[in-house]
Amino acid sequence: MKALEDKILTEGKILQGSVLKVSSFLNHQLDSDFIMELGAEFARLFSDADVSKILTIESSGIAIALATGAAMHVPVLFAKKHHTSNILGESYQTVVHSYTHDCDYTVVVEREYLSQEDRVLLIDDFLANGKALEGLLELVHQAGAVTVGAGVAIEKGFQNGGEHLRKQGIRVESLAIIEKMDSTGISFRKQP
Amino acid sequence: MKALEDKILTEGKILQGSVLKVSSFLNHQLDSDFIMELGAEFARLFSDADVSKILTIESSGIAIALATGAAMHVPVLFAKKHHTSNILGESYQTVVHSYTHDCDYTVVVEREYLSQEDRVLLIDDFLANGKALEGLLELVHQAGAVTVGAGVAIEKGFQNGGEHLRKQGIRVESLAIIEKMDSTGISFRKQP
Image (cartoon, rainbow over the protein chains, first blue to last red):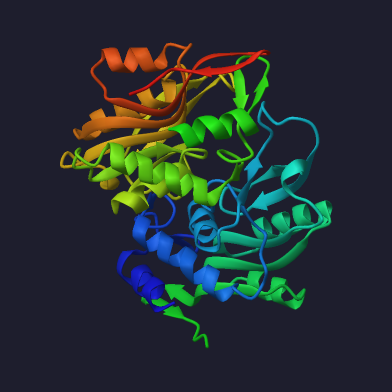
């Protein structure tokens, strides 16, 4: 998506450890109109997938997931990190490792919101090592639901998460794939 | 807002400790179309306030804040709980007490996204003791910006947060105010 690549080039900052900071528009401050456009693009890409529910993970996936849900007119479910005190009854949960924060955390969704009738689209802001999406896949698996694919705003193509998911047969649609990123700049993978 | 009161009556569950569980549509699963309607209603209520930025707090404020931002065409900023490793430079921060989780946490926004030129609308899903909104007010104060008001989906009118904020002169618009909530049911405060 050309508009996202342009936005990354003009507003993104490269930090140490292959961290791309896009908090001016994507995951701290949110460019509302632009996020709605990203959601509309995911809705277009997955318009043939008969999606019944969108699944994401708190916090930075929520905005794009809502934008996608609004464009597709389907509910969004966001997995919570850790347990909170007002989760009733049974839940689906799995452990995810975060390389960014160098820790493990548990992601949880309540059973009643994910069922074997669901056709689930996973949405997240970033795909690098793919651990967060793998956690979400596991939650869908526990529910006996179908994952129709994963929509990601920014994929770090130089890390192996995307390749690993595609090799498993998961349809991954990334709106921008960064091929290379260093002090000289950012280059994107050409996409059809 | 009648549609929200109806939704609370049909989908809300009352848990121990005056907890109202609305995670089927507001803060775990999100009814996308409905959340967009809530955002449009906040945009209508604050259409005269010349808002330049919306401020909320992760995670459950993000969806409604984005919906409001999209309706008003202004950016959203969500305060993060704790520090994360990719916050550059200086930040505004303050400590907030959570009665729900019985703990203190630090809420943080990066300085560059909030300035003294901003006219800020606070948005959150719930208002009970008001501690989260007071934390956001403090961040706006640190930035030298103006708070034009606070938009809340559900206010617990039987707790003192809303009254306390209004006494400080803050314009608080709650889409539903629960006057009473017990095993016999839920009653709402009449609003103009």
